View 1 (cartoon, rainbow, N blue to C red):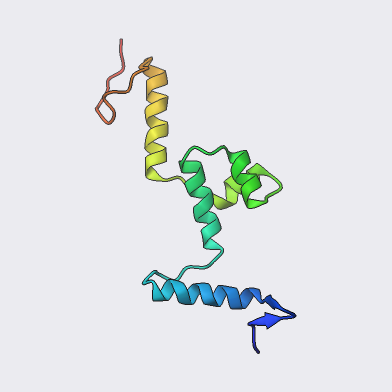
View 2 (tube, one colour):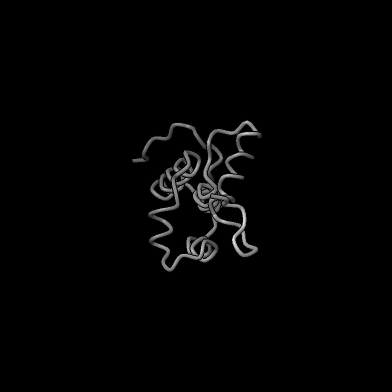
Length: 106
């Protein structure tokens, strides 16, 4: 069956196959076109974009679905969150010593 065009439109399978072929030619591991949505959502959130903006960008009806399905936590984001929590706990407004071992104040 020819997946290329049906009534002047590209068949989704054809587009996916072409993307897989281009990824292969670029030396990338097997990657689905749909995987780009996951990456885009994760990168936007890692960059500090609000979940509502990510949700609307991806066209989802709820931000909970976006957060549960399309995001992952990058190690850098997890580290930044831990540092912010520590700064709040310690009353440490300036974080000049990022990554340094800190002790709880008496």
